[in-house]
Image (cartoon, rainbow, N blue to C red; front, side, top):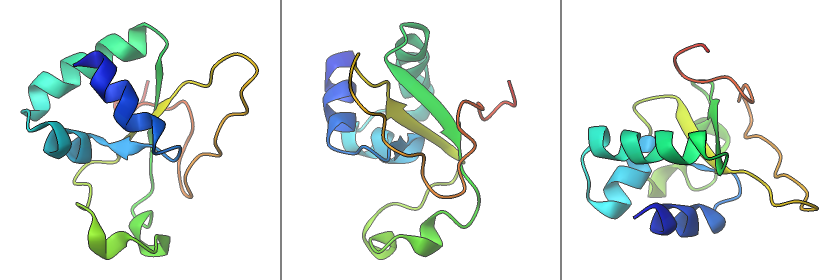
Length: 99
């Protein structure tokens, strides 16, 4: 399942929220959080927090699941790869729990 999560994020350089990932994989949030924590510890993902207006500027806002949390997950760039810019209103490197 960890590889599937990474694969899903490959197609979304601006990241996916916890709820979107849970919906895509049809898993409970608590189970997904454990998998994402593993990928975070491995250095494969970055977690950012987003502002409440994140969806307002998105042209696809009416076509996706609105996040109920402000947790967003992005792939860590491979060596030599240019990182994607953080989403508007995101505080890069800051976890949802403030650490």
